[in-house]
Image (cartoon, rainbow, N blue to C red; front, side, top):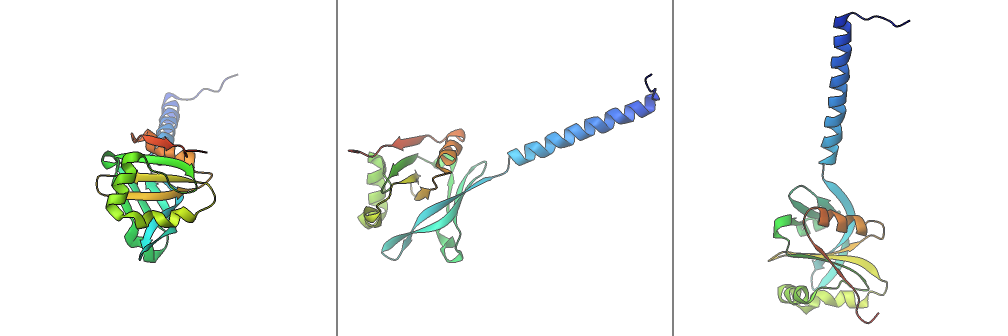
Length: 168
């Protein structure tokens, strides 16, 4: 035997169910649009040397922000709009590799001293170099997040060049 509900009660149950479903979808889509953050190491100038510092790369709707974790390094925060990024190079090597044009641009921007510390790094690591017309950022990516970071760039319309180490 089925229970019989008055029409008004049935209408209230339907409205509550619809409101609940709409609320769940609203919460789910708001989480989908939040900025994504990944831990990286950012190469920052320190006098005549370059040092690696812990940082977070934050993917927003309009661009990326690379923010060092240490308060004294906050002035080295980088911010790039996706539309301004000329190239993003990913590599797995002992030092960050650049495409031909990227190497020339970096050398002109900061001189050859910038690359010297990377000559002494022994272990192969995942690197990402992001360049705009006037700025760049060199990051060491984690072994667990490098694919996700490359995918974040790709889904936001930034082509990631996968550079291979020559002669290896």
